[in-house]
Length: 181
Figure 1: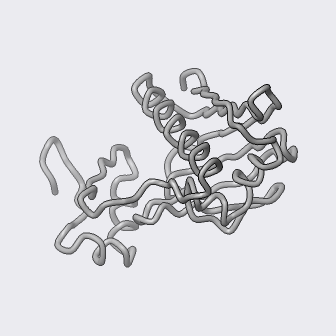
Figure 2 (figure 1 turned 180 degrees about the vertical axis):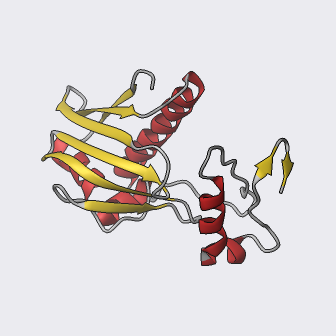
């Protein structure tokens, strides 16, 4: 594992308002993902609307100051440790995100870009009151799976009802030596 990815942004709102957008289900859904909401030491599931999801647990809950999460993409693969810290600043609130879980420099770069995008969407949603979350497209329908658990993942994806409904004619297959099995 490499060093944690860290990003921060200043939001023109008090920490209590930012905290609500990080923990209240309806508000999380406006900029990030569908979720029933978070609570101290609780389990959660973030649904992104395209079949992708994260399952995880709240590991730290310091209201309007810090939120710690662990999560796994689709409940499999590596566990990522996320820490979000809020601090008052001249503009309103400084939000700092630390994501521990990247295994390569390329993955770290991707996580950094992703977090900046999500934080920008958070700021836009808070300042405009609009839904700013990513709109999924049926045109985006490919995923690369690498590792010893490919067969398990392929079986799981193939059994999920959204797969056939969203991507008619598509099939999950295991790549073996550059070709598909």
